[in-house]
Length: 378
Image (cartoon, rainbow, N blue to C red):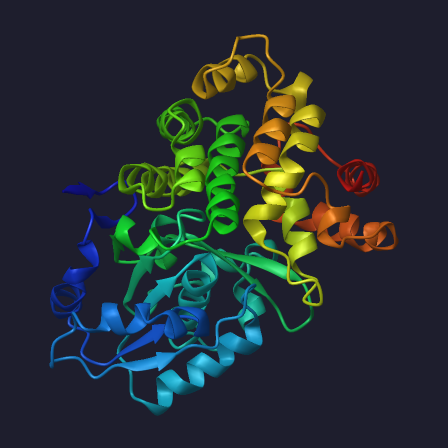
């Protein structure tokens, strides 16, 4: 069993979710609010995980997490937390449930509107200690279980970032067995989310060699060693699932040095609640466009990226990612996902204001984002 302390205390192994009761007791949480979604409830996963609680914890379940978490859903969960007299939060699910749980932990301990604590408005410095939070991922994608950020669609319609060391879950329980039932398309999309985190973190101009080393290790696991393709091809491959969950955690550890324009564009598209677009799929589809855009602004990092992916030093990483997306069954462009040219102006304006834009290797204006969206649509 591995114990990681890079960002927090992370328990990582097959069957690790059985330790939930012990973890709650260790943190002094007796009345947790479990933030999850109806899909996991219907699958019986919530029942299976909760079975490990024992009789000491009085559990309240919030299962209203939307595909892209919203401030409205956070407010509903906060009301449930207060009504039940909860004293901590457990996140069970993918990135959406974990991000929502972080926002709940913040909102129950801080006054005012959630938007006031977003990174773009200088809110990080306003965030103090939040409610105790435990995270249990059921996908291998966002790595939110070890990250300091959460992305929420605010009541004004913007998809914004909450970021603070205070939002890192106190303990993460990473159990690859919880991902064994994921269908191929979701395995592919979440896996490419993890790979995009690793790639954008590596390419970020911020100086953080340890984070870059972690990013490269994640890329090697997912792509060069082939665990992403293996997990998509055979969802019961427990070894591939272990490595992809590790790669997802590494992606979030690595992006402590920032992300880039892929995420700025993805956040813009994800804010459209009528389309209900999956964040990882968006990252996968947009990534080749930004790799082309950044090519001459990253020094020797494409050589390092190619090495991590197992390619020749002079290969075009954008072409490789396009081919990989096709092999694992993801869309070829944003048009296939329902994004239209009529939306480009609003999407570009949103992307240009996104905080991830400021750590892209190449500065990108709203006008340039319009061109990039046009390219990603084709």
